[in-house]
Image (tube, one colour):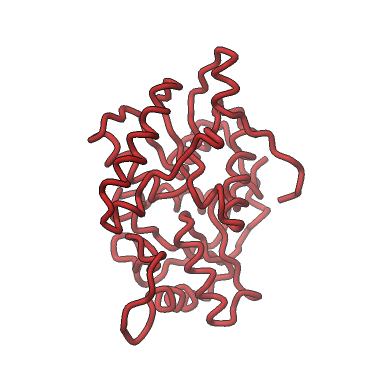
Length: 263
């Protein structure tokens, strides 16, 4: 992607003008603070602008969903964060939310309703699949044609929410050569970061999970490891560095690949 500035509409500014965007783009902590995943968030904003989506972000009003807090056992902190976010959703009359992080997606979609949230929550893979099928998003299949790609299923997208085909549809739409890892879909191995594991020291054992998962990917001889989760991206990138393969093999989010190839 080039370094041209991307204009991203902010909910408070649009609301002050009497506008109510159709979608809230939930950026997530990684998209806001992690240097690598900021590139993914920018790429998604670029796609949304390109296809003319009526959306906005919360900007400084966005807080963590509370997913790591709940997974780590701090239920009070989770509920404080969740209730605060839900009040903001109600204030801006938000009805639809698009997420780029499966952890945010799972929490907003499956856990926030218990606390009074009535928003429709969609993961970007489902959203972009619909945009392609409706003809709103067109892809140049020559950009990444015949690249050998393997896809790592995020736990919170796959096993937690049964989204396996949408990311694969997006990859196939790019004209790439998709090679599955031996463990894929519901049998895919976790990257090792979910459930707040990213924020604690490794437990005793013979091998860390992210190394074993990276080895699964390397067996496919792929040129690109595609992921669709910031936690997975961090772990797979670390795994490639551990194996001294970061110069040979790319770890890209599907969003980045779509942004590169869209017409």
